[in-house]
Length: 121
Image: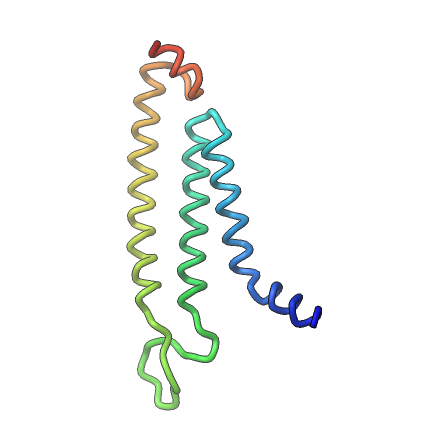
């Protein structure tokens, strides 16, 4: 019974990687004071979500959705399409965030969150 449990846990390694990446990204976003590090944490969390969707959409026994004579079934292509769209949104979000960070740096000459808040009080 123990061997079956261990095999099940190891067999779901992609979900464990997802959880680890989400925790790392969340930690970076909440504990770091540097705005660039917060953006890096956000990107790590986005990558974890991409991994989760791709992992959930994959079925080992099925083939890619292309015309093959001996295919017994096809994997649903919708998760991959959604992730392609999400990657575009992620890149756009990162670009806008970095642009705002550049403007913040030009105004306050720092990227430290606490110093920016002190300057506004």
